[in-house]
Length: 261
Length: 258
Image (cartoon, each protein chain N blue to C red):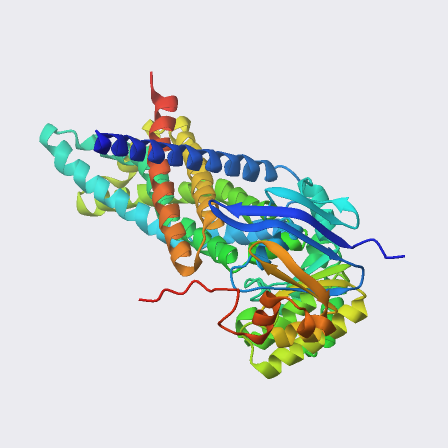
């Protein structure tokens, strides 16, 4: 009986901790988002973050989507050849890349590259009292640290994904034309013919949401970190894991909203 | 007639979970006075300072700056109060991503919207005030030694000519000579700016050099305060033990003995 009560107590405590964490994150997100719309903004810092997220992530996202497109063409061919449906490969590649693989893979890569860096940077600032120093210098850390990262995340991710989409489709094209023997102009024509604006738009909306989530998780976990190097390490891990999970969950929700009949 | 206190803490309480850190702490600091709060590690000195700065919200009690209650200020009002405060953090807390001069001029550029060129000139002036050349201004904080970081932190603290300056363990981690240099700079800069200073330290040599008055924080309370010149004749066993660094006495450190 006592053991059961202890178990219930532990479950209850864990549930309360979860609610407390969710509440803290919600308040943090609302505060941070509100500062994105209220002056003063810091164009210099926003620009720096944009370069960091957009420009320096381009090689990683490009490589990821390129190989994703190539593998997709190869796998589709081995599957579709059984039903003599090889002509569907351009459609499968372009729809998969623009709707799903482009934004999701880019989101996960950015979570690893940028989310971790944000958590480490903000976390180090927290444990070395630099965030306290911002407060004493009459500067709001939400405005100075968090808002520029959120703005850069939301604006740069769609651009990254757009470039990633093009590279991913190009990857499928390379494999299909040079390895599988597709006609180049027919491949391109098939790709354009079945691609709709909504396919690309839904991917870009996802990208903006993922950019927001990655920046939010990086800043939130960094901001909450305590206790020196170990705390910063834990914040970095938590930022990447939570951003990745949220990306996958929100991906399903957005897909459901966009394409559910 | 005694001047109205610049800083007044009355019955300030703060606990973190079951650990009570401040338990009705009282302190008054007069204008242009330099007061040191002394106390052992973990006695709550930093928490007291952070309560005044608004970085930690007290559970109970009152804190006034220039007669204005500051415990429940809005973000905007708090920023206005903090604009007249300078702070030297224990490890200087310089911003890694900015150069030395940008660190010093940060409050001027971000807080007061001063033009960068003018702010840079002031930063170089302040660097000179703490005995450093303008060439240091272009360095990054990572290139500075511990003593240099403290001096840059001091320059940042006085950059806005604040009314009040806080010093958190100003000599911790420095060799005795550099500690003395920093103390002398603190005294000089506080005088030049005409500020009120509140410091926390457990370095007694430093405390004696920089303060007009001392207060002893023990178990969350201000158990003694008086002029620095009278600290050796305080008549308080806790103060006597602390300033003489004796292991035996009323203050018992929690040391595990197998």
